[in-house]
Length: 348
Image (cartoon, rainbow, N blue to C red; front, side, top):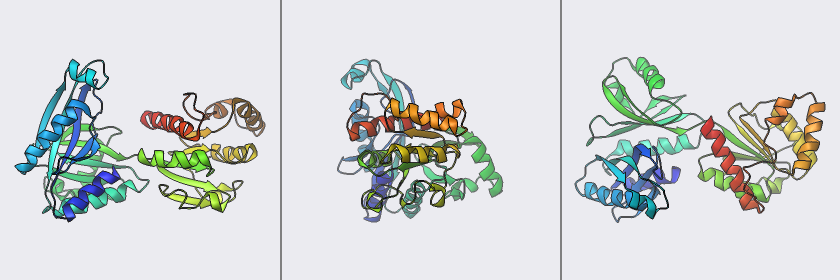
C-alpha cells in the first residue's frame, strides 16, 4: 500500500497522470475483496493488484480509456465460470471497481498521498474515505483517531458543525472492514488503512530476518529487540519500524507492549524465551507466539504454571508458533507465522 501511494505521488509530482482502481464491493468467489487496489499508469503498467486474471485485464483497459478522457467511473465486472477456471477458481463472482482519475494538477491529492504514507508508518487506527455519490467526480480523504478528518474539507462543506461531523463519521463509517454507508445525504466508501498493533519480534536471528520483511509487506508494523547489538541493527532489518538493543530480562525498560500488539518470541535460547514470555504474558497482548518444539513448550508451560499463571493464560500462547504447514526452513517458518498473524488480525 505504501509503495502504491508513493508511486502515485511521484507520478503527480513529475507531471504525469494516473488511474487508481479500487474494489469497493465484491460477492461470490472473487480473487480479491473490497479494499484491493491498483494504480494504472499511462503506459499500461500497474502497481498493486485487484486479483489478476480477466477482471484485472479488463480493468486496465477500461482504466486507460477513462484516463484518455480524464474522467472517473464505476464499473461492475462479472467473473464467469470459464474466466474463473482460467485462474484456478471453482466458480465466478462479481466485483465493483471504482476508477479514480488522478491529475497532476490535483495538488490536494499529492498532499493526501503524503499523509497516507505517514499514517501507514504510525501505529494508529486510520481509514481511507471516498465520496462516491457522483461516480464521475470523486473525492478521497483520511481519518485518524488522533487528528480526525484529514484533507476532507469537502465533507465539512455538507455540515457547518465540524465536531458533529467527526463524531458522526466515526460512528457510522469507521468499522473494522470496508463499508458503504450514507451519511448526511451523501454516499461514502470507507476502508481501514491501518489497524493498530505492533509486532514485537524478540530475537534477531535467521527466522526474524525472513519474517520482518514479509510482515512489513503485509502492512504489519514491526519492532525487533535483541540483547546483542549486531542482531538488532537497523541495517539488518531495514523494513522494521524500530530496532532495540536491551536486556531481555527487563524488556519494559525499552518497550511498552499494549493489548493490541503481537509478540513473536525467537531468542537465542530456551531460557531467554522463558524470560520474555513471562514478562509479555503480564501485558496481555493480542497474540503471543513462541518458536520451538512441543517438548520445549511443555517444559516452559510447567515453569509458567509454577510462576502463578493459570492454565488458560498458558494455553492462550501459540506454541509452537505459526500455522502447521510442515515448515522447516527459516523462510517457511516465517510464512507459517505470517499466516497465523493474518488470521488473528482478521479475527480481531
